[in-house]
Length: 90
Image 1 (tube, rainbow, N blue to C red):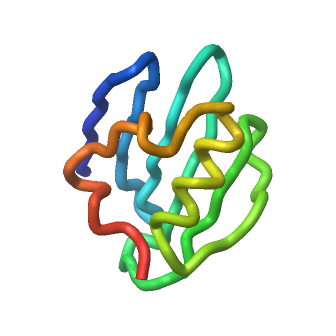
Image 2 (cartoon, rainbow, N blue to C red; image 1 turned 30 degrees about the horizontal axis):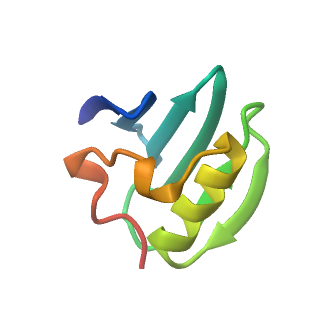
Image 3 (tube, rainbow, N blue to C red; image 1 turned 135 degrees about the vertical axis):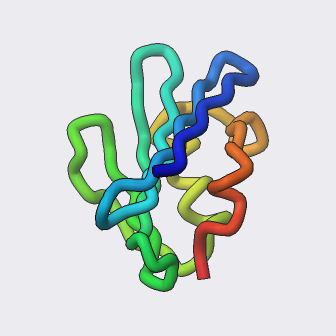
């Protein structure tokens, strides 16, 4: 299983692969936003809020990151992306 975490600009990004999903979670100031994709990497990306509730689905990684940043109240350019997550999206 691949796991990696990095922190920049007060935001921690954690990437992991479960049996069914690729999971990229961002945490900042006690808030969390998560971007997920099926383990095969071909399905739409899902953005989940802190409670794990699905908020929206996107084809593009950039749009999913924008929504995650909005949930955290930060700029999308501040989100650190662990290397294994760089190819998420269609």
